[in-house]
Length: 281
Image (cartoon, rainbow, N blue to C red; front, side, top):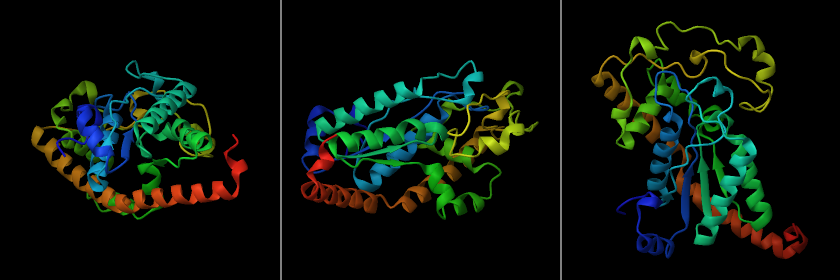
């Protein structure tokens, strides 16, 4: 295909795609303070992952979704904070539009910790309203639940997460957007304990920001990033990050993912015929 990004396609190209397939990957980003990196880091990371996922399963990508609930990073003057309910409502309308257009197999992806607070409700609401099983893939959850954790342990890096971010910038041709470290944005050399460490027990009693309302007390609390001293070092880290992303997408097995989504859809339709009252919502 000429491009995987929906908004860069012509209407004719989208129509031709939908004649044979119905897969759309939806990277959900955030705009927030992120150590010494640009504030669109987690938006770019989600979009880089989404592009690789789409390539692996012949899907398209609906990108340009950078403004959602940020969470504890509101202490940053750069952070754009959108309420959780507004985030849910917006994504529901996007999902409904995509269904109308013909994209039945929708896959949301985000690397933002609190994203489950507003993506998971969309998954359930769309199913309850339309009986269409859309999917949410949380790479951070997958890292913790599968052997993807080995990618981090074996990366031979002090900061594989930053490498992934740089890799995503590189995938999208945006690596020049990442500045080299200066004294003003050095959040690695003098790493300090988190200002919220005193609440570590109760803050971790549910999944990613879902247990406790909290605000960070220092810029360094959110993602101190490695010292980037040269463009050569930055490119080397990006190359390593691209390898991790490629291995991660391979571990997702996107062809099996979309196959199972189709099977779930067929199962749901069969159950709805047996139990018609399940559609009365």
